[in-house]
Length: 429
Image (cartoon, rainbow, N blue to C red):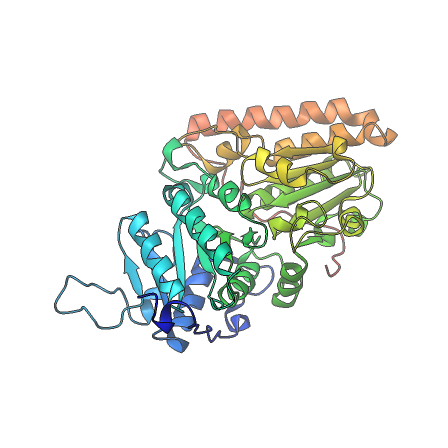
């Protein structure tokens, strides 16, 4: 088999449709994975023999079912439908999906592997062994480029619905972060347009392990298609529309990494505008996790000057992060002045409960972000300090009211995930 050219020197680049044709209007709500499913459907149409998707029995649950509109599933066991060219292979075996994905990719084609977040860890070791093989292959002159392998992680701990503690496990992010930097790519697009831009980029890339962490629920579309493309190109940006005074001269920098986690940061910023107008905020979103690593540690890593422009030289910074906080602390190690940085992430708390309760239990909620901002700013802003104790008590009262409400009603308040009102004049990112 090793003598066949298909195993070492064949690559069929993906003919990518323009994702802008599926873009969502800024200000609307949209599901990232629904948009991704429609994009994958269009990719199948343009690449009917060289792109496939493997799913461990969760495609519809993950709201990627638009991918089935072109040719449907490939049922090998069914004599009436096998060999009909279905581009989707759905089988409840992550190991089988990963093995097929590897073989398909190594013979020149392109594969996509969406999964519940908690279950990608099942193929952790297989992914690592594949990346080691890929590393060695790149050192051989006769082995040519191949497509990247592409994971889409959804049904995450932040929106577990009816599932419990067993379905809370964002550790696959750390598995990819530990790979050789040359091959590792981790993206957490904050809205549907950023998801489309990221997916298009990943499917056009070569030789990487791409992990995209997204949401299947409808969430706000913060950025226009043009803004999303630029934000994804940079990997991280100041979001003036969510900041005060466009983010200039802040008391505190609040950073969102992940769809729901970013929503909490923006909701906290809106809350703080009403509670404490004197508090100056800069809101930053990170969509390409690799930009945060120490300068020179990764091809995407920001220079120290770029890092300082985003996060200032000395102001307190809160990273509100989708994954485990230890991962992000390790990634940031080597950056200057980390004594001012706090990282909050998933803390192995919560079970079958409401979405906002999950965020509160893991200390990444709007309330936790707002309390951090007040406590961090009071040391340098006398106006904030003069009201800080009262405001902190007010937020604690809101948390108490929240718990009382869900214990009595079994659900979040109806307005819990309404789009926050951002009252300042917006400017372009």
